[in-house]
Amino acid sequence: MVFPYPPLSPRKVHTMTLLHRLRSFEEASRPVDPEAAAFLAKRFASLPERNQVPGQMLGRKTTGCEATHGVFPKCNFACKPCYHSADANKVRVDGPHTREQVGRQMKYLSSQRGWGTYAQLIGGEVSLLEPGDHAAAIATMRAHGRIPMSFTHGDFNYDYLRAIAVDENDEPRFPHLSFAAHFDTTMVGRTGIKKPQSEQELHEYRAAFCAMFDRLEADYGITNYLAHNMTVTLENLDDVADIVRSCHAQGWRMFSFQPAAYIGNESRWAEGYRELTSDVVWGEVERGAGTTLGYNAMQVGDTRCNRVTWGAYLGDTYVPLLDDDEPLDHAMVESWYDAFPGNFILRGRAESAVRILRCIARRPDVVPEIVQFARRFAERGGGVAQPWWKATATTFVMHQFIDAADTAAGWEHIQAGTRAVDPRILEAQERLEACAYTMGHPDSDELIPACVQHGILDPAENRELATLLPLPTRKEKQLSP
Ligand code: SF4
Image 1 (cartoon, rainbow, N blue to C red):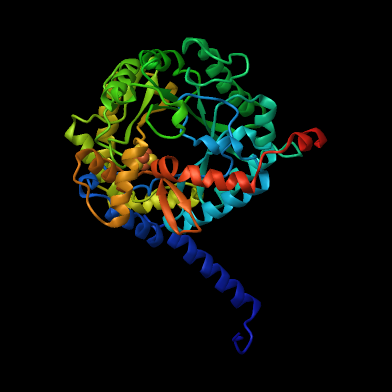
Image 2 (image 1 turned 180 degrees about the horizontal axis):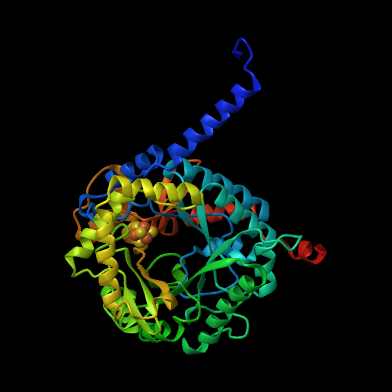
C-alpha cells in the first residue's frame, strides 16, 4: 500500500471526500450512466432484427424482467394446468436454501443486467415460506437493485402479510410491496372455496386480497402494487371480460392473462389450448376494458409473447396511454426513449430529479412534445376537464408461454447456432431470442428464458432439489413442534 507523503491535513481529506461525493453524484445524475447504457446496448443488439423496432423497450428502457427459480418449488394448490414440473411438490420449502439461492441469483442477474429491473419472487407458492424468510428474500432482491414482486395464489391472511411487512418492533421493513396474485377457476385448494364453480364466485376473494393491502397501508403506510393473474382456458375464456369489468376498481394496478399452454406438468394438461390464440384472448380483454388496447407503439420483447397496454381508469372508462393508430404517439415514444434513456428504478429522489433536468437540458424539444401528448391522452378520456386526479393507472398484459415441445426445438437451434426452417419452430426460436422474462443460472453462467426453465430445465432441477431438500418423513413431522 502507498501512503501519501507528507500526510494530508484533515481539511484536505474533507475536501477530497466532498469532491469524491460530488463526482459520484455527477455521474449518477447523468441522463444515463455508462454502465446502464452498455447493458442496454448489449440487450438491444442481441434482439432478432424483427424486434429491433422503434417502440421496443428492451434495450432502450429496460433489459427485461427477471425471476427466481429452484428456490421454493412446492405449492399447496392443484391447478390445471400448472407450469411446474411433477416433482416440484417433492421438494421441502426451506428458508436458508431460499435465502442463499435468491442472493446468488440476484447477484448474478445484477452482474449481467445491471441495476434497476423488475424481478419476480416466484417458485411454487411464495406464502409457504416463513414470513421472515419471505421478507429476507424481498430485502435481498432490493439490495441487488431489483424491484421484487411476490407471486402467490393469494390464500393467506393479514397476519402473514403483516409479518412480512413489519419487523419485531412493529416498524415497516419496506416502504412498498408488490404482489401478483393468481385467481381463477383452474385453481384447486383455496380456503373457503376449494373448487370454484365460476369466476364470479371468486370476485369476493379477489376483493378481500386487495383489502388486506389497503389495511396494511392504513396501519403502516406501506404502499402497494398489486397484479391480478389469470390462466385462460376454453372454460373461463368467456369470463375474462367480466373479471376486468367487475374487479378493476378493487385495487389492482395490473391485469395479466396467461393463455394455457402445453408446458409444465403434463398430467394437468387438457385439450384445446391451441385454440386460445393471442387474438382470441386479447379480444376478450378488450371487451372487458371497453376499448381497443394497442400494444405496438411501446412493446416488450416479441408481441407474440407479450402484449402490454398502459393506461388509466377514469371511473369505469379505460383510457390507453398510447394509440397504435396515431403516428404522433409512436414519435412520442421514440422521443421519450431518446430523451430519458435507461430507467429510474430504485434511484435516489435528488439524483433522479437532477437527472430529469439534465435530460431536458439535453433535449428541450421533448417538452412541447410531452405537452401535446398529454393533451391527446386527455382528449381520449373526455378532455382536461375530467377529474383526472381520481384516475387509477392500470396496465393490461397478456403473456403467452410457448409449448414445451416447440421451446425444446427452438432452444436446440439457439444452442447450436443454427436457424430453424419449420415456421412454428422458427417462431419459438425468435421469441426465445427476444425473451423478456429471464432466470439467472450463476453456476453455468447463463441467462435462461422462463419457457426454457419450465419447459426443459425444471424437471431435472426439481429432481435434484428433492434429494437435497427431501420432504420431512412422518416421524420428523410428528417430532416437530
Ligand atoms: S418466457 Fe417464453 S413466452 Fe415469455 S417472453 Fe420469454 S420466450 Fe416469450
